[in-house]
Length: 149
Image 1 (cartoon, one colour):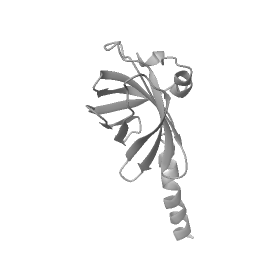
Image 2: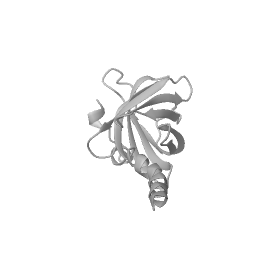
Image 3: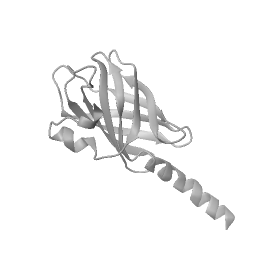
Image 4: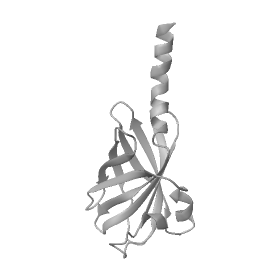
């Protein structure tokens, strides 16, 4: 009976850990255009994978950045707390912009994700768990996520 209970806990762990990612995360990243505000909306899919929505816009210190957003697909390893997000499809594409991929790590407290942006002239990103509605709907309507500023 103890072995069965232990097995059930091990099987449930990825799904439970993956739930830690659900929600809206807000922060910023740096690429060729400079400092850029970022909102990630993450929804778990099947165990170990999730879909995400990457929404970017101008922060107060870089007002020339346009608003844009696209869908992503990701993987999460609960043992290492590492995640990888890969670009999928534009929803709102500004002229001369390209989609980027992300790789990062969930903090031990589960309240921050930080890591690398994989794209031309890109560096790092960091996002913190944020209350409020998902950024996905605002971007689909072409609206900025004011709370990013």
